[in-house]
Image 1 (cartoon, rainbow, N blue to C red):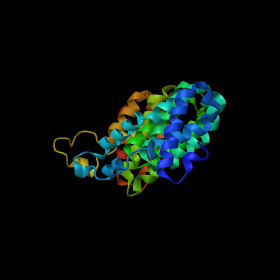
Image 2: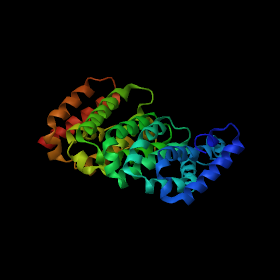
Image 3: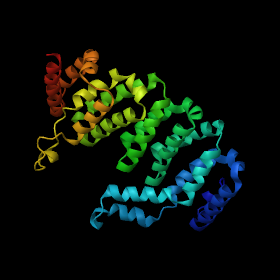
Image 4: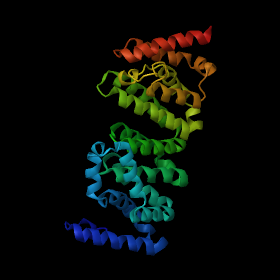
Length: 316
């Protein structure tokens, strides 16, 4: 069925084959184990292929229906998780051995980055999260690569629901990754944050980057605690990011921190940021401040100036 039936051009035949396959998975128990490297990717992709086309149409017209895009995305993901395919997927994950988990990783990586449909991409992220949480010995050898893939998927993803799912998976993977690849990732995020400050989509992308650093800290506090030099300077400065133009127009909130600064504040505080931590990473902090002051972004130059004042007050 996997090799031929579900690939046939007839939609009706594919539906029958998929239904029969789900019955086989549910009734086969542990005997389906050897087939899980093929089954798991298929079941993930079926979360999208079995989704009603009416839902994707309604998603495109959600604002006109009085429903926010984020709310509708969350409903689509919840519906996929309540489907028979998701139940079969959970059964497969429970019986896979370490070799079968490893054999599934390449296809999981492909779906994370190039998966078709929101339910499939979120489903792949959830599978990675579950494996990283429950099958640590099996996934540890692949954690560094999957962490890089998940980060790339976050930066390329347009859906807020999918970005949240990827960030949760990345946070679990960070607990398993070695310090070197995690440190490389954090340094690349800092570089990208500074570079994207002059692009047209700077606000959304920088908020995504800040949220990812915060989620990594929440999911892997020990690992991130050992790599403060690679992220704390950016969080220290990010706390001073100015409010966006749209936020400055909100009545009564002109003196409150904007969305971006608030995320950085949470990352900084939850990650152990304080005067002592800032002082212990003064060299890295000053180097990053110098880069921002010399940069082209007005927002980052302003944040750097405010951070310099903060730093001076800490040392006085």
